[in-house]
Length: 211
Image 1 (cartoon, rainbow, N blue to C red):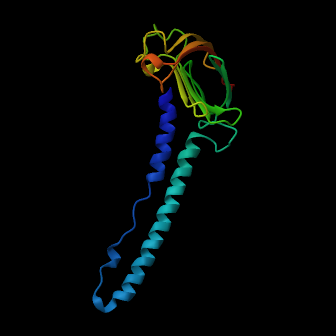
Image 2: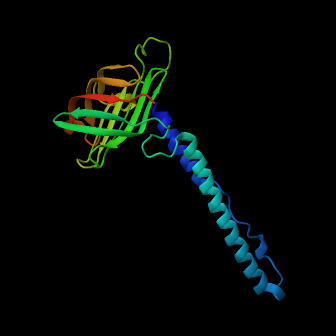
Image 3: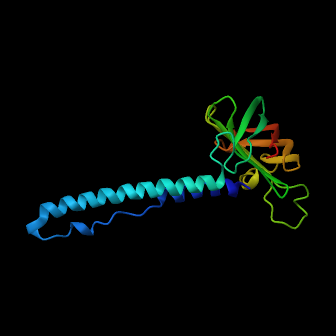
């Protein structure tokens, strides 16, 4: 599900890159009319750049509106934002899921910022119930918290989790109906390693309301 979140930013970046470049061919003139032609070329280039900027702005607006309704009270996909609570050891995080709060085919993807405005963010993915045996290629559940306040990145599960000793980075249990995900996890701080690897257990709850 995190692919959808990355896709949003890819669309925005692609839109910002659109527009093309100005035509400089007007600068090639004879010496007899050099001054006049140079001035005309500069005006032509300026006009072209203005047109490019307008086209880029329009394209970006279309791309964003295609993914959301432009309302700050909704996520990129136009869904109402949700809430999340994650406990990592003795630290309790509360989040506004104002970036992504999406339910699809029973799976759930969320992303947001700390509710108190501090420099902390979260993204998490949960496959549907029975994901291990339904024959679909679901990624395992995962949670990642970037805490710039404490210079930590706590990760449980997902592809990163498999890089650490078994059981140290894993969503150990969870239940999800696509709108509410609750469970327990073991987190590693990926900024640490070896004998200094930080591992903390905790629990979580993410809620995405109906659209």
